[in-house]
Image 1 (cartoon, rainbow, N blue to C red):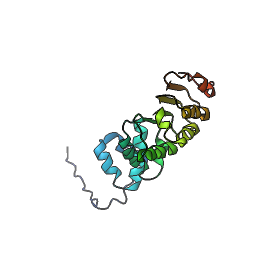
Image 2: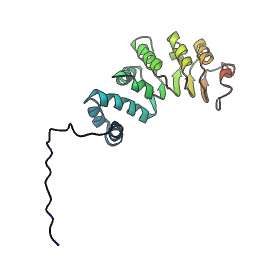
Image 3: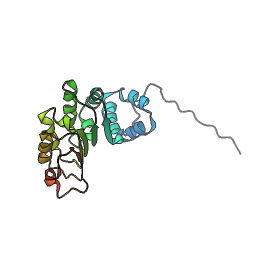
Image 4: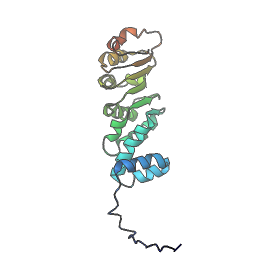
Length: 194
């Protein structure tokens, strides 16, 4: 059998302008084949990749859990980096830290008021007590399905539950000695688990 000669094809190394890759494919490759360090490096190479990477990473994580107030700043900076897509991708958020008055309350407020697609939210009741707007904002969430509130009862918890019009399916309330059942009247059509 005769040996075939292969023809060499020369592609200029620096000319990538003709290479095309669908952004969905690129995002899939970024999120599934790069470790976190490599992902951050790629995301910081341009604004488009950063924006796509933030929303993709958050969507892939499911629920974001933050246990310390100082981590709020890092997460806020990450999700706020460029554009609003990270906030829109956030579906679950648990802040389980003790929040004192200060800059951290502003970061939490910023995260909560922009994450309009939240389906799951978990907070300590004293977090709701830090700002009047927290109860109003949580009450305005339209897609919330799972709500968990821990800690002593505060009237803002009642305000939150009265304002909430989402189709809440699961509620976990631990108010100590206060009976939260009367506060759940808004959810009688959708509630499946207490």
